Length: 285
Ligand code: C5P
Image 1 (spheres, protein in one colour):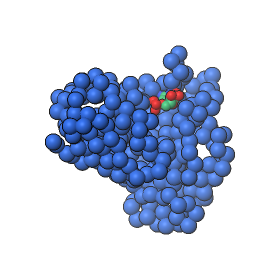
Image 2: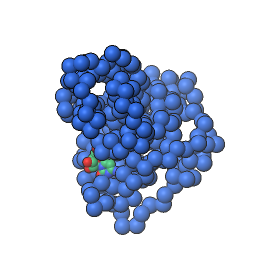
Image 3: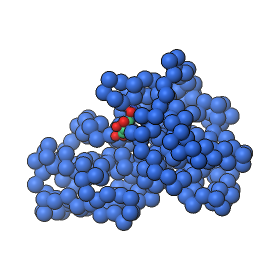
Image 4: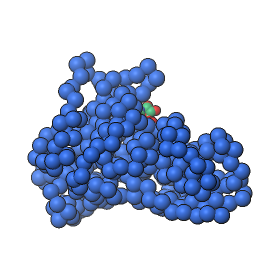
């Protein structure tokens, strides 16, 4: 029986504009995804038990049907009448429920990994159909690219031809954010703010960092800091330390900033570690 290990990367939303609320309860977005070099390892070994077994030491990661990886495996097993079982071990490094899409990334990795170890021969389109039925962020990871524009509920992906690599510091406050709650707390403006995704893409392509700083942003910020007011202090502190391009990723609570170099990022990390326990230096992957 085959066994494989795959990397499952995290993402940042450098830009997240909420366009409107849809009749199905979701929100139409325009978002720019950046894949980063923070990743989990996910190991798959097929077996003859017929059972799906998830192993993970992280206390916040469910190992039963509540785990998106389990759900992905269960859908595949059902839809393609798979008789084999699988053991999936997740080595977690991506903070959980942090706006970094670790769970969605793991689910995308599971679709790719199970396609291999169960020899299903699925096309990318078939994996995308299943991925989209499980979550809005999964499609980005199935596209296997560093940069993309996400539209619709985030699942309509257009790859962006950006060759630049950027450095970030992430601060991950120890607060659990529920995506549903953050979207529910949104106060949509009657007049939509201007959409700057195209302008930002051009500056990302040119690596014009001073301009990039101006156009980063996340429409979920107001809702995030209304739900947990103390989170306002994180971007404030980063800015007080001279950081720029400061924003929440996804539905938070992760706050990131954009740095000119790895050295600058490491220097800022050392200062932030005195106050926050989860600080990472990451770059585009
Ligand atoms: O798709 P996903 O399961 O990640 O979304 C979690 C929740 O976030 C959804 O149930 C919905 O309430 C909210 N959401 C939304 N609009 C989006 C993405 C998510 O309202 N584009």
